[in-house]
Amino acid sequence: MKTKKRFIVLLQASLLACTLLTACKKEDDFRIGTQVSDAYVDPSTVKEVAPEDIKAKGYVYDYDKLNYELVWSDEFDYEGLPDPTKWDYDVGGSGWGNNELQYYTNDKNATVKDGILTIEARKEEYEGMNYTSARMVSRGKGDWLYGKIEVCAKLPKGVGTWPAIWMLPTDWEYGSWPASGEIDIMEHVGYNQDTVHASVHTQSYYHKIGTQKTATKFLEGVSENYHIYSIEWLPDKIMAYIDGELYFTFEPTKYKANPTFEEWPFDKKMHLLLNIAVGGDWGGVEGVDETVFPQQMLIDYVRVYQSKEINELKHE
Image (cartoon, rainbow, N blue to C red; front, side, top):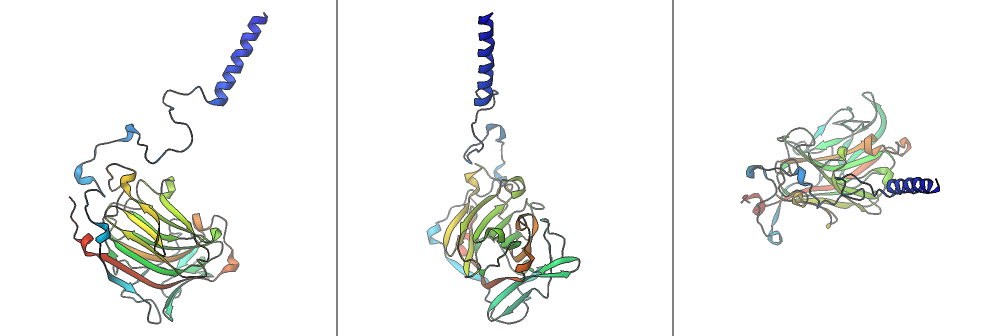
């Protein structure tokens, strides 16, 4: 009888240890931990890709010998509304896919004076919304494939502010967001002051499924000082900089041996957007402090450069 009881106790202890230490695992549960390296490729997900569908591969160029020329700019050396030959506006208060709280106007929240473009977000009721702001776009007036984009800006601050300098596809040739891509040159949320973000979003990599490719940089005083936020967009990679310092690189072949448009839709023309959102799914994570408004994003200049070597490059 004692022997039987001892066996039962030992069996129970063994089962408990198996549960606690996860020694008893299913045959297909090979990995330990909660994260998988980007270098890991699950063999079951590998599929044949037609050569004509492969993106961001087959380009040969000497990066150190690239020459860039200014092809588009706004120095804001005038006064009044932004130059209508270079800028248009997205208008409305639909929430913009992120439950944002502002109404974007086209005639009252963006002005140019003393060499500076000011985009201002205000606490005011307008068209059924409680805030107003502006979302300027170069669509149809400044659209580019590859190049360097530089924006010298001073950012707003305060909980609930969400300024952005970013790019969207002009023709959406691969389909609706995120299939045709998005490049975030700079994003900042007021509840995390002085932390700047650069990201890309594609069909395979975007924030709503937690796979976006992004980087952050802490830069004290982004709301007190001007900084240059820029990207260099090449046929096989995108690099983001602050004041000339590289802090983010997206190179799709680091994640997929043969990327398609799902990883690299960035072989079509895109345009620039400048805006301040209020609240929203990210900007409003910690609410909105309505006492901080009005808030401004000040922009000294916008400059776009392109390289003849890249523009003439042929896929091999």
